[in-house]
Image 1 (cartoon, rainbow, N blue to C red):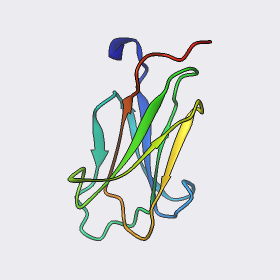
Image 2 (image 1 turned 45 degrees about the horizontal axis):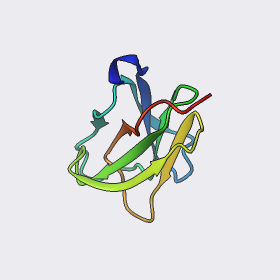
Image 3 (image 1 turned 30 degrees about the vertical axis):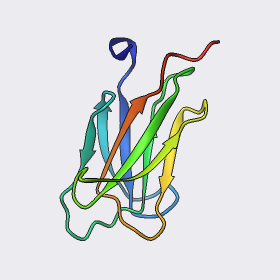
Image 4 (image 1 turned 90 degrees about the vertical axis):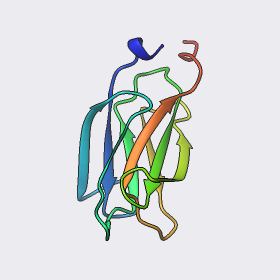
Length: 105
């Protein structure tokens, strides 16, 4: 399953709506993460973009430096991207994992 999945891009955004100023991590595979050890992280939302049609996955947002502590998990619900917003905390990392198999067409 992993070998047939395309890599996706992670974004960490300085605002809470997955838009605007960001840190981008290109071409990551499932069950990997991208982040920063920045002590005063400005990132309030994370996005997983470039999800193939029919794939079901969870986007994961982390805090406390890189991917030390899982803070949020959201499904793509059939969409081609995921946006996780914070509830006042700051993100320091992003990742994703596939859920089961490709959805039926």
